[in-house]
Image (cartoon, rainbow, N blue to C red; front, side, top):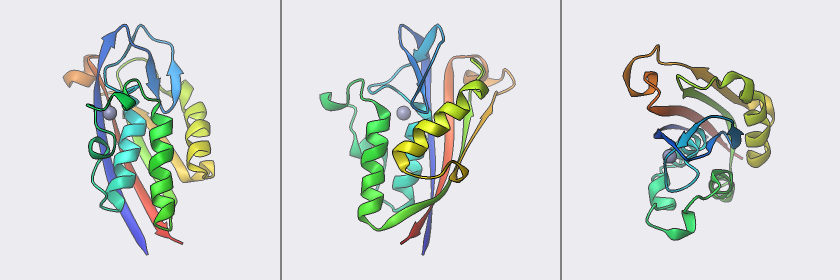
Length: 158
Ligand SMILES: [Zn+2]
């Protein structure tokens, strides 16, 4: 049996924060604002994984009112969700995702993101796709005010 899930996330870019996307620190003069490390790509993947099994959303599992998750490393949250999937006897068939950022360029960091995320999720790299786009200078993302991510996850029952 297969289950599909969809995830979306957006975080505001702000000064005085580290930019962490896909578990990778990206050198930039701004970072994403959030209670955790605000890793927009991981959050979209987490929501897609939870959505596939109708297990609610990231905010329910890791509330931003909980001090425990302040500046939390999102790879740890991703690992928690992966364990949840495993407990329910599902494994990841594949993940496809988009990062939408006007700046900085995501492309050079995608191979490292894939390496980091595949290790956390215990999957081969051919099962994870990360694509990068700009928003052609339109809207909040295009005007460098925010970074957005989308993900779809297909799970298969063992
Ligand atoms: Zn988020």
